[in-house]
Length: 389
Image (cartoon, rainbow, N blue to C red):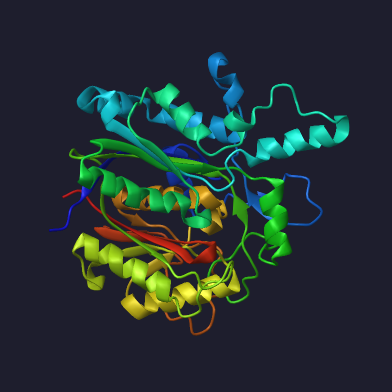
């Protein structure tokens, strides 16, 4: 029998703004958050940077202070009330944490290394274990949210915070937890910007998913947190998570989308659904020539051109390790508020594209949606979401 778990609360912050209200407004208006990159790089590109200032951490957590930590603290503040309710309902030791990240605290380490190059010593306040390593997120969240359950950080490049939903689903089914805080946070940094530029994958302009003349991705930063519980009521339900690893190439997708197809099929199988029951697909949609061609073929293989498809990366840029959870959160938002966001930047569409790109915002009930995340190395994840029962 299919098992679904309610998503009882969520929040997100990215280039569209801080919190669900700001992001929802921008999605409804079709307003992209991509702007000329503010980081000092020797080339032109657009980025999705958080537009608002980030408050600092409490004094007793100053050793954790990074841009990633501040984004996480902002998100935790938004979920303070539902997390307090989950602690009271289940007990702090029964609420677990599963986060995804790719860059972790790399941006802070870049600054520390620059200081080392200039002076021969690292900054006095720099702490590698608390400002660079991915598990610093767990320590910070446990302190700020008062959670004591099991924790894990997933780092599988662009599928990192999509795969957290698979971990959470298994932990809930096994009875390891009664509730889980899941999500991901990543920040812009020099290594990712220069790395994607060296791979010829970075556009000089705001990215244009599925457009005929798309020429690469735009990077972004931000994060999202969602609260999953064994039972309860909320804006959406987690229906299934398909995960595959095709290991075709270190950076290029398998051209026929075999791993992507298998991930979507597995998500549908776990949810007990047929392809005809899906109302909307939030595609990985990076705007690179190879990814969009592969994903278009994979979606067409299962759904034809019946299902409206969009990519929210035209709004936020590619948030790498935070992309999966952020796009799941935006899909939950579409379910909750009964609308289909437009896929901004997609005109003119690639000729002969075998899928239906949603180019205009529309009010329309969404009962079932998929959110795709396909990473370097062939690490694929598809999250199936449904409206409340």
